[in-house]
Image (tube, rainbow, N blue to C red; front, side, top):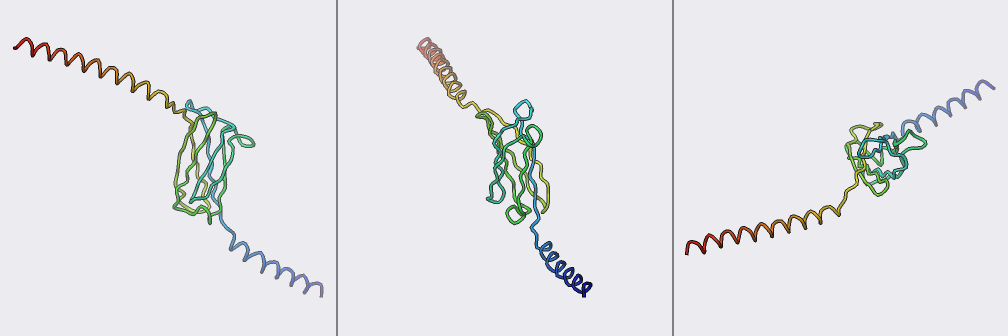
Length: 152
């Protein structure tokens, strides 16, 4: 009797565990390193990973190595063929990079370097360029006018 009860329990366990394993969702791990412009790892950067409209947020570094990040998506949320976009922000500097998930249960490595885009440089450069163009244009006008007056 004990043997048949054990056989029944073993059979029921297998009957429950195998179908559950067959329908288990595979996962894909997206990982990489966040660095600054001089390629030094940055711990504490805010990292956003987006795949197929699904977003995962994490922070680079602890408990991983300095600058490293890692997120896992179930295949149902991040299927093969989708582009994975990673963006990182650290101390007002941002950077982005992307890669394509080619198969399920894949580990995709995407490294991101944060870059400080200084928008205030553009207006100064525009002002200098504009002033230079005005001075050169005025000088060219005076030279042409002088030559024209000399001919008449």
